[in-house]
Length: 205
Image 1 (cartoon, rainbow, N blue to C red):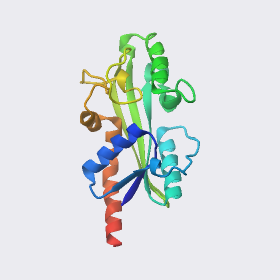
Image 2 (image 1 turned 45 degrees about the vertical axis):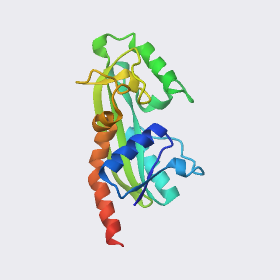
Image 3 (image 1 turned 180 degrees about the horizontal axis):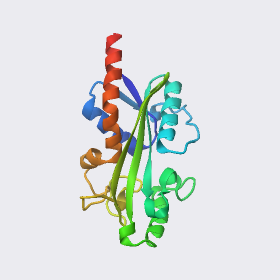
Image 4 (image 1 turned 90 degrees about the horizontal axis):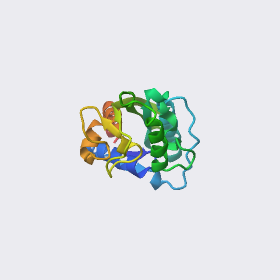
């Protein structure tokens, strides 16, 4: 099976590749970096799941291959759910990760420490050119710090500490983060569906 990860985000590709390879040695993993001619549609949807489905299905139809679509973000309940669906462009179109973190940090400083609870949410969709196979969700709960910590990870990782850990996602070893993250929880729910699709392909040989 060839499986396309429907993103050009280098960090997401690395994380998902590691997860896929930990379970499926026989899958050949591609990404949208392998299809430079592909132009992703504008993201439209009212939930991470809707956007992940859009990404997966559009890329599957364009490439003719099994595709894994991802949409994820950080939710701070005390800020009305911000940055939420706008996590990638929280500080505006073209914002860098640092720009987004700086905007969030300014808002966090207006909150009491006990109000800085937050969680990451990820939706993953497995699709074929014929339609969506399955969409799964995963969340990871924790608290936010107002001084970025760590050099690993990406996005809001330097601000996020999972409950029961005394390090931010950007301070954790990659393999630890990949075992406990919202993305891993969503991926684990897709594993049985990938196994079914692999079995289908094997039966056609």
